[in-house]
Amino acid sequence: MNEDALTRIAELVSERPGRAQLHVLHHGAPILDVCVRCDPDTQFLLWSTGKPFTAMAVHLLAERGALDLDAPIADHWPEYGRSGKHAVTPRHALTHSTGAPLSTWHVVGDALIMHDWDRSTRAAAAAKPKTEPGRSSAYHILSHGFILGELLQRVTGTPLAEYLRTELFAPAGLDDTTLGLPPSAWNERTVLELSKAPRTSFPDRLKVARFDKKFVRTAPIPAATVHSTARDVARFHHLLLNGGSHDGVTLFKPETVQEALKPAFTDAEAMRVDPVIGHAVRWSPGFQLGWGTMPIETVKPFGRTAGKEVFGHNGSNYCNAWADPEHDLVVAYLSNHMTPRGPALAWQTELSDLIRAAVSRPS
Image (tube, rainbow, N blue to C red):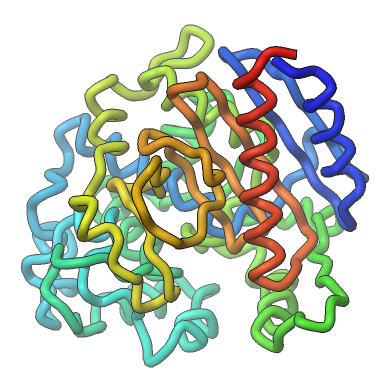
């Protein structure tokens, strides 16, 4: 492990504007724990980095026999099957392949109703698929969480936020993780900071304005408003890296974790450009995966050096979390500083590669 490289990584994170947390585990032990203008227990908005929590809650239901990942969602949520989606399964939702990635006319339409659970789930149920389920992935930016979350609520009879708290967060020791920011924490929230770079787009400015509204940040939006700390996010990924156990607590069976991390598509299928976000993503049922040496030019937030077994999830290019089985390495980086997409992705890629390099070569 290169201590000088780790020191330089901490400096790079500290030099960036805004608040940030970086927590890195190597062989289960912390080797970096950086907090920039915040405390270790300061909660950050995770964006899509929070998607795997709901995904793993669904896998937990399957492990317990309450749900079949390959049976129709409509078996539990009849309304979802009435718009040509009768054959859509939880696995399709987990892999962004229901054929109906948007619930409304546009992602803007989805965002306008995302704070209202009932309207969002009704819209997801009414959406008509554009492609055959399971044929290919198209990123479900917001609908992913509402489809899986409503399914979970139909099966358990428990609100998703409560289920996550009692069945996932508390048993895993994720004491600072919540679905939706607690209203009591509103005054101490991590306010989003928009870059003043010339390339900052109108959609980015709109996103900041929308997500810094109290009625949005405190709402249960599973694909976007999980709030957590880098320590908690890293702990969760280490639990999965360790086969479902952490600090003597077993939350998932090893075979459940294996199922959640198994590639969902062939390499050739995975290399197709996603029509919603404009670049290819390699999926498992719930996670984004590394590309290894596959010959593809696409975004790589886990680093250009990430192997095919690396798993995690990028969060709007501002937050990022991944686990690397080959190097027994876990990285969680959270930030409130929102920069244009290109520079933000470049930063995630560089940071990931620097961390992996620091533990891959001797000092």
